[in-house]
Length: 355
Image (cartoon, rainbow, N blue to C red; front, side):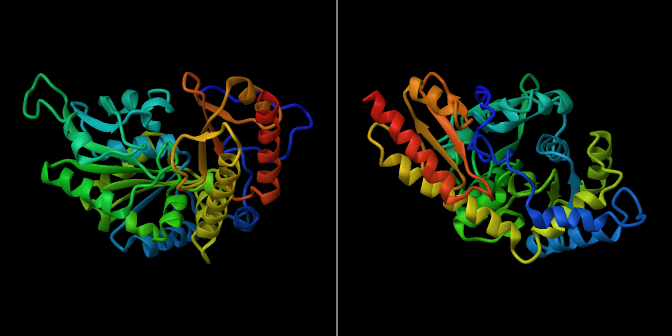
């Protein structure tokens, strides 16, 4: 995707470029400040980290092993590395974050090939994966070992729990494993009306990356494994991958805030609701076409190039597919109805001027 236009000095305080552009939720910031008292054991041997892990286990089950990390790319690399050897491959959808937006980090640090296949509305199915799983047992071919899916997907759709279960069952029957990139797992859970743990062991997922940053955190992700045999190795993989925080209590405090009193769900539900409001408003403007179903906090639309450029001059956002004219608008926990309505009004004016 291309970079958003540079905003003018008087740009609105909230944009639709990315939920990464949003600030930190006040309760999360308060939790960080509250953790900044006196000394505490380092590298996760502190009470706040213990509390965060306990909250994760309330969501995902007591068997879940939790390893906090700095960022999504690092969490994905650490999680995948616990499942793979260099001669094994990862099957992912074309356009997956691990394939196009992580600067080749998975392939460099894992030494494993990524096999990307076209998806349906951003999702993989057993039939689609099967087309990429070839040469099993042949020493001349990489061996497909892991299926990596994203929840919510890169185009804003969501796998149902049943779809993940079916894909996981198919994989496990073939001695393959399933990794879930949960950068926006909270948005997906809220959209589907299920718990976070429904995307874990009960769905057949072996390892997942849990995203906090896009849902109101300052910079906090986690790797969660449901494979006891992988947990010991993950301790060393995380350290070697430079994802072990020395002052881990500050990352942990963010998860304590998000996972307490349903804050994760309220943040995600609000962002999703703003995306639905944005989609409804945009779809009502003649000439604007939605490119994908709006199931989480992202809206993808097809716009004329000149309208995109004029709109970006006021509200920065990403062009997702320049050739097709597809743009991406993301909503966040702090997006307001007024933000959405002003954006839609300007879009309507620009489309009407073009007409």
